[in-house]
Length: 178
Ligand SMILES: Cc1cc2nc3c(=O)[nH]c(=O)nc-3n(C[C@H](O)[C@H](O)[C@H](O)COP(=O)(O)O)c2cc1C
Image (cartoon, rainbow, N blue to C red):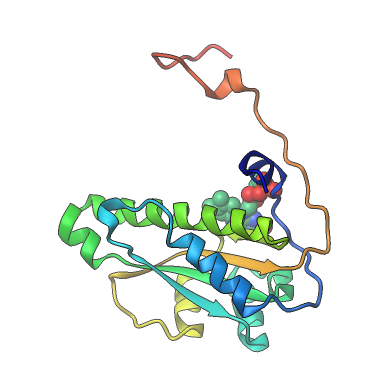
């Protein structure tokens, strides 16, 4: 699929068919994640792939009771080990952790769309609850950056309103004119 079409067609999907995503597709999506640019090539991202029903229900509860999440075939919890980033970049390492993982997430969403799969990037989650559900060691250098739901879409997805370019793009200097 052409990149421009893939970017513009992708929508957040919050209703999924009762059909499993193959492990092969999940691995393609994870491979795309690792192709993302990342500070110092330190690859701080870690991925927990969840397909157990009870865990999916628990995760959806830990995501502010967004119950639709549990209908996804697979949930990918994007985590980060920030030790190398902190060592190399000091305090900036924490910020780079999120930026690296966000780039990885976008790669995953676009690759999923190309594979005919629906996704939603979920940022509303209770870190402690997810840590407990996934048995993530309770270490200050391990972060949870994002949750992604993945499955065969059972909806068109809402087309969001986009701001006019004049509101968000400035040339050469900041502009407050709208
Ligand atoms: C950092 C981040 C956090 C988000 N958290 C949630 C969430 O918790 N629940 C949800 O339904 N959608 C969530 N979304 C999806 C956005 O609502 C969605 O991307 C936005 O409305 C634009 O729609 P589109 O993805 O279809 O283009 C999140 C997206 C991002 C980037």
